[in-house]
Image 1 (cartoon, rainbow, N blue to C red):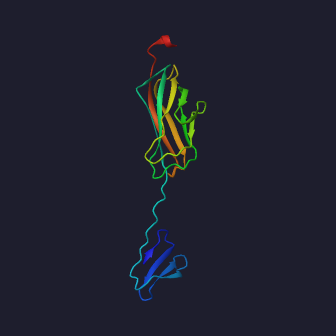
Image 2: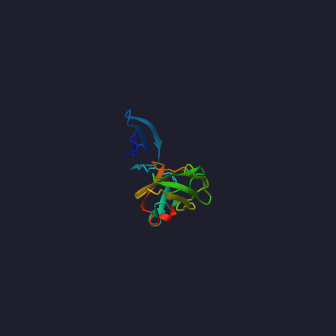
Image 3: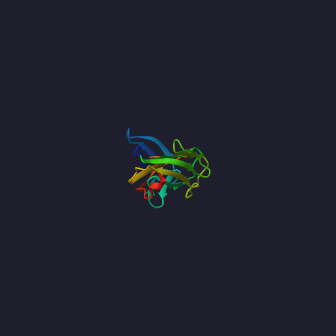
Amino acid sequence: MAVTPDSLQVYVANAGSNNVSVISTATNTVTTTVGVGTTPLGVAIIPPAPTPKPSLTITKSHTGNFTAGRVGVYTITVGNNGTAPTDGTTVTMKDTLPAGLTAASITGRGWSCVRSTLTCTRSDVLNPGNTYPPITLRVRASRTATGTLTNTAMVSGGGDGTATATATATDPTIIDPCDDHHHW
């Protein structure tokens, strides 16, 4: 005898009748009987293999500390670590700058980027284990920005099959005070 993973049915091998009975657990009655050949001795239920799905990832990085009043650069990379390619629907990367940072430009080969919303989109297929070309986000730190600011970016779309369907990356960035007042 074997129970289905959802516990809705029980399959019972009937060696004397050369068949398998399917019993509804809700009603405790036989709903069907299937002929299976001579003297069945056991039943096994193998769950179906999971459907392959894409799973988008995002990483965000920068080099060194930024300086108040100067431009700094972030690199944002979107990848697919799922088991299937993206499905050709729009993939959207959205960056959210913390107070103290202002976008100067946002670009990436093959990406359609809008600086005013810090959003980049594309819809070409991304195979598992690959990444799209990186996005370069140039920002200016305000003259009064100091300490650690955290920049956040999210990616969604493309048929992402994960439970949340949104991946997020954060990048804490140290802002050093300006050391040269001639740039003001």
